[in-house]
Every structure is written in structure tokens, then in C-alpha cells.
Length: 164
Image (tube, rainbow, N blue to C red):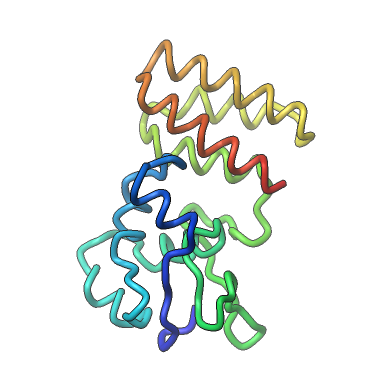
């Protein structure tokens, strides 16, 4: 990410702020709230210095289409400015839908993500298998953890799969 670039919320980002439709995990939501369309990346990093992994969170928001960079690009990367790796060492640009779902589970469920992550890891990478695993994980989260987080997981998971 270019430290001099100005980043702004996309329509999807504005919708998430207004309605929480996509169920972003709290760290990503905090990062999204900081993005104002006037501040450079360097300024955002200064303002959000107390937020852990802010740069990585902003990169994920960019990759997921919640924010955009200068000239409307949703991915202002080049060989001279490669995209960053996200927390956990996976690379968002190369991440499969399965990897994104696993990251969503970790972000949303934290220490309760174990069974959900195992279910996702055990499924095939096909769209049908991921859809079935998403539904099974949703049911498990709803019954065993929390209905609100289950709805957030399902909504964000469907969004991930729809981009596949």
C-alpha cells in the first residue's frame, strides 16, 4: 500500500458502516471507520496507532472491496509496491475462498473458532463443498456459540463465496 495514497470507503464499505450487512469482525470495522476519503495511509496509520495490525486490516479491507485507493483502484499494488501479507502469514491476493472463510472464523470467533476452522479445512475447495461447509458452520455457531455471530458469519461468508 502506498503511504501517500488516499483511501476512501466504497459503496460496500459505506453499507457496512450503516447496516453491518457484511458482519466484519470488530478490528476490521474499526479500521473501516477510520477511512475518510481525505487522509493518506500514513495519516490513517498515525491516527489509528493504538489499533493492532491496522496496516494489515486496511489491506484486507482493500482486498475485500470495502475501501478503494487513488484513482478508484481497489488494489494499488505493483512490483515496486507489492501487497502486504495479512495476519497469520497468508497472502490476501492469493487467498482462496476457503482461506478467507477460515480467516473470517478466526476474526469473528477468536478462541471459539477451532471446530469451525477444522470443518472448513476438511472440506473440498469446490463451490458446492464450501457452500455446504458454510451452512454447517453457521448452524454450529448458532447453536453452540452465538446467534448474532452466526448471522454475521453467514452474511460475510456468502459475500466471500459470491466473489469466487
